[in-house]
Image 1: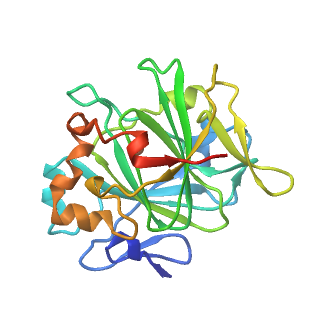
Image 2 (image 1 turned 180 degrees about the horizontal axis):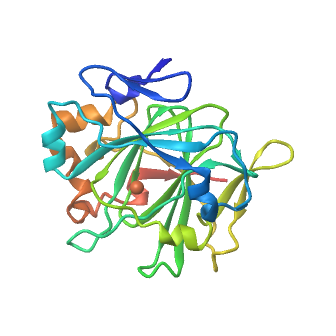
Length: 267
Ligand SMILES: [Fe+2]
């Protein structure tokens, strides 16, 4: 059992891959993303996996004393456990989604924190009708680090390691838009394991005029509660205004950008 210290909460990853919530947190049951729910999002729809559930989502995790404050602020704090393994040649991943627009006409942003393991996030921007792809980035995020996704970026999380990956996220309490990923069988690029056992990035041919994939490294952005080793739950708990950008990105448009939140890596 591993204590997920980067969460700032009494949460543990059990040896069987489940999460254990200790007092004062209440026990929470996850929802499961099973292989059968994912086939249309995979490079290989016939893929198999060595367990029934690819990843589990634990939604709305709050200390009882904080629950009302966060709900009033229209915020969700979720945890996800990604089991290692492969879906055909592809590494274990989420199905991917975009966020809807708020009243000001901007898509809701999101912040992720890696609690255990290493995550790859493949984020992409498309035009309003989801016909044309505009930008695509691959972001490697280590334990204790954060990644802020500016408004308009859909995202897929990938576990390309041989151990469990656990992430936390803060996001406005809204429904995801999955269709653009379903239509094209996943994100703009696939992360595969080649015959030599190395990570290989392959363009998804269901996208036309694909932009080159750029590699990014997250920057610390204290204004968005993204500081290495600092649990974002604790930042939000002590000053909920730090998370206002998740509901009102229009007030932060000068800083809520790829350039401000990431460093471009040379390939
Ligand atoms: Fe999201």
